[in-house]
Length: 265
Image (tube, rainbow, N blue to C red; front, side, top):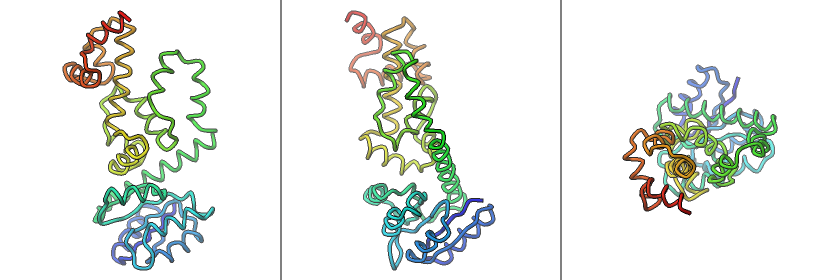
C-alpha cells in the first residue's frame, strides 16, 4: 500500500484529497501547514507528497527545499498544487526538484492520475537502479550495434534527467507520437515536461521528435533507393507531402535534392 502525504492549508480541499486517496486504497495523511507536513514526512516516510505552494507559515518551495536537504526525505517525489503556474514558478520548482504540478481547481481524476503516474515512474527508477540501470546495459551493448544505429542515437544529448524521454522517442519516433504521449510515458504533465525539456536542451519535445525523424530520413536517403513516400512512412509521416515540406524547412532543399547531393559527395 502506497502512502501519500497531502500538505494543504485549505481544510475542505485537504479532506477531499485525503478521503479520495483512502477510498482508492492509499494510506493517506493530511497536514494543514508546511511545518506540520515536514514533521509528518520525516515520521511517516510517505511514498509521495502533494504540497500546496501558497501557505501561511511556509510556502511549498520552502517545504520542498527542506525535504530535499534531509537524507530521510530527499528522494520522496513531490507534486505541487497551485492556483496559477507561471514560467518563473515552473523554473523555480524544477530547480528545487519538484516532480510535477497540479493546477487548482483540479478534478479528483486528475489528482489521482498525477499521483499514480509519479508513483509508477518512481518505482520504475528504483527497479532500474537495482538492475544496474537499463540505460547502462544498453550503452554496453552499443559495441555490437551497427555504425548507422550508433550514429543515429547520438542526436540526443547526454542528459540523465531526460534519459527516459529520449528513449521513448527513440523507440517510437516512427509512430504518430506527440507531447502528450511522451508526458504520459514518463509520468509528467505536458506543461511541466515542456518546460523541463526546454530548460535542459533549449528545444521542445516536438522538435526532438522531428530531429530524430529527420536523422533517420537522411540515413535512408543516403544509403537506399527507396521512394520518398516509402521513406516518409518509415519515419512517421503518413503524408509524404508534409514530410517533404518539413524536410525542406530543416535542410533548405527537398529530400530528392538532398539525396542527389549526398550521392555525389
